[in-house]
Length: 565
Image (cartoon, rainbow, N blue to C red; front, side, top):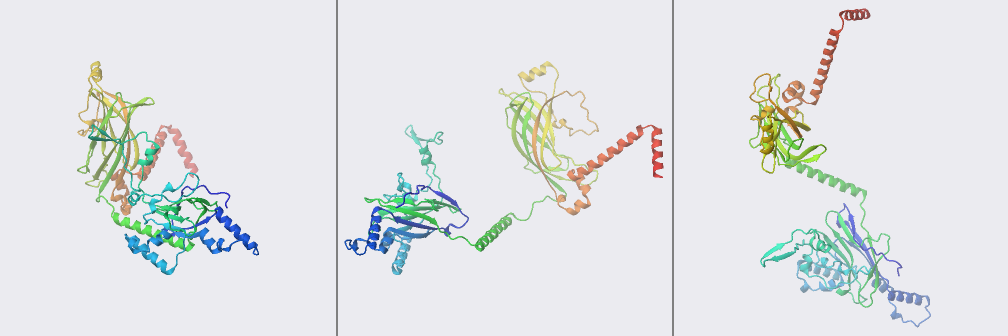
């Protein structure tokens, strides 16, 4: 009799890339009660003293009966059906079969009866298709440390099929005897409420390995059935075992029901066949080919044609964000903005060119009051040059914006004007634009702004930069009074698309012309910067040479001529 037992009967979760159909489990049960030990002791004593005849031979079980009645071992595969004695007797009669599964079991039981090929007597299984599978929950387990107890009254077939459906329990109360009110949100749920209300419907396949622990000669009674092992899988490589494999640990303890309450040993081992290296390579190549085919299928759905603008057209996409505004006088700020497209620029008909942010309260950050907008906007435009000229300069779109404040009494004030020139280089840009507002001198204007609201406004917002109606060479703002206010921060993500970017021949032959037309990029800008630096250095050297005395210059030239000679 075992001195110690394995009391860890909890679930064990495994992850496997192999198919669950390759799972094989060896289950062994062995009776270790005092009656079995006494019979074994008497048999050994009789064999050691053959001359004494005071022991009846028919009271001792034979060796074959001891092995079959007190222990059994069976290797079970995933969803492999092994019939119990009760099922063997039930499905022998075709009249007891009501479903197609029952008729299938009848044919298998009839075939086993003809071939006498049944390998099990006490150990049998319930597969996921059996109506008994979900009727064997944890209520069979006792809290006294025993692993298993015989099955009692189980749920009905309908209750078993509804066990995996999500519960929609609600705490309903009747108000005014007619209107039902539901407590949708429970802010302080109890543990019992969580267990009863939060049931997730997961498609798990279940298999139970059972044991008939009845006395000798009385197998096939439902009250003697005990749950030995439960195996669950979700089809995604997760396998749940209850209890876990022994793997060198002590056996589990099983106590049967009834008056005798016999004790049995239970051992569970994983005997699945390990894959050979060539099989692993074959499976790896198969999955690799499968993933490649799936990738090709997805590529075929997307297609190989990449959307490109027409020849000579630059497509400009801008995903922007108005991040914050800070340094303004009043609270409750909002921003009104619009885009201005220069010549040869166009946008889609449904493309909005203006927008208004939400009203945002300011909060103190350091020494400034900051309003965090995080307002996104999207802009798409197309540039098409009418004629390719070396002297043509590309003008980029401009975003004009106006910052306003709105208080509790619906008094709005202009807090500042500003503009943002769209970046010429693609990529991410963080730009901070400073603002100003028109200012009227005098006390009356300040009192009016404070008590009534309102302030001087610009009729033409483009006056912040260069008015669109201006045609001269110099713009004078002499006499125009302004006041510097706060600043607005933008996050810009720019993308540019044109056929000229991918045409290698055009880039090689007409690189200078393409960069001039499209605004210039990093490489060309670096070259221009180096050339300008050389030119500035050369001008400085010339200026320094001119500032030197004439005699020193002549002496230096004479020394250079003599050294060269």
